Image (cartoon, rainbow, N blue to C red; front, top):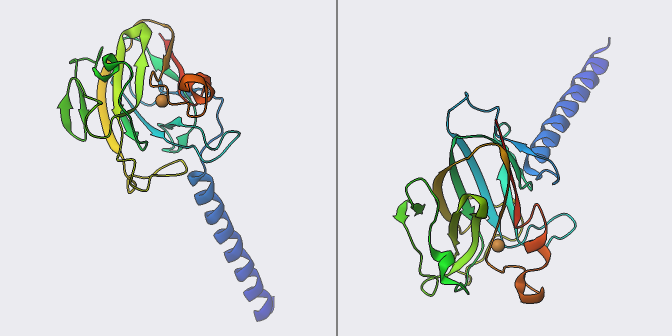
Length: 227
Ligand SMILES: [Cu+2]
């Protein structure tokens, strides 16, 4: 092969490699499509605690309803953010939850939702500080709750300052205004346990309870607990 031919081949291969790198980075950064089941049963040894990382955003920024509020969850294997609220979990196992809330808040209509309920120690942490109840009439209020009625579990997700420039499209990064909320709970025996947000955050819908509030993969989903 001539020098020119060899150079062309090398250049061609280089461009293919660059293309592949750009494609994989873009694929990683683009959130996954909703509708699947996020499996948390295979990423740790049997009986070991399961770590779940989720985020709540004021507007998802993509898909059929880009302006809707939504939850996203981090794929435990790939680390990729996915808009998927059906989580497969092992039974009788400690779950360590970390939720990054990127949304602003407001006073709760029912102050009961400001109380942490059903976690292993009856508490949660807000940016590293332990709390049992959050007074939503103070500060930035509450944006959402993570609640599993069947487990008596409910944790308020304290809002960020609404006058700041908030993350406008998911997945949001920790360089954007957020509150980090952590708590732990134990899964019961096998079964399907619905979870949801109880803050009427469906802006523009009747009483705030339509749209994302009543749509799976946005403000609610299922814990599919398996043996
Ligand atoms: Cu909500």
